[in-house]
Length: 299
Image (cartoon, rainbow, N blue to C red; front, side, top):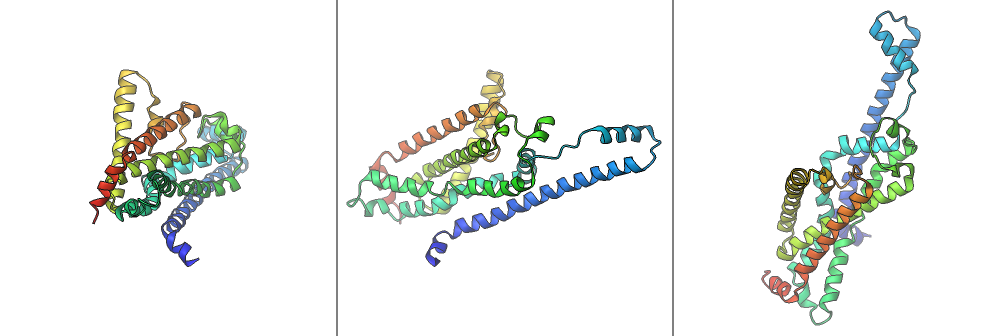
């Protein structure tokens, strides 16, 4: 048990810290929703019991007494907590994904593991072992997403009446199929997490020290986001092709699940990014000799 805790201390800390933060943000959302409901009930009771003479108040009371009360559902609540409560933490999600795998990956490269095992295993097996190490923490963000969902699933309906009536949250018809919605949402989180890991793997190929690798990966991540938002979205899509599809190129918003142009388009873009990232990882690790030479320079 002690060995397990020691080897997974970073992951445990991440889960405890961000799990607590996400649960607190859920609590804040539900408290705000309750305040809104209490205020509405107060005015309903007031309109029923008091004599209203002011014309504007009469119109207000007529509206509040005749309109059907529709409580927020899971989808609207989940959308609100992502946009208004969790969004400030979006900048840290990339680090949550890459820090746990980069600790052992950088250690393998810095300590010249490939040279020590050169006679005992093939380069292909070395790469397989390294990729397994890199991808074995892909479950972290999906688990945190589930932690964020659980209080909302327990307190709000999966019937998307509020979302439909007020055109709130997601536009996709998937909200009529909760299991499929949740499965595809978590799958999208895994896909983007893999893109994040691939970015850090490319950086680790050239920078074997852990802290510089994390910093450079973060810089590359932001540079890529700026490129997609400015060059791809503004210059290419908006100015040249007069299209507004650029929103789905936002790889920073991993929890967003932007369905504005359809779930199919979102997955097509993210899977394309994933394939491109795999190709780049393959290209930078393709040459064994170059990697060995790079590892030999480590002191």
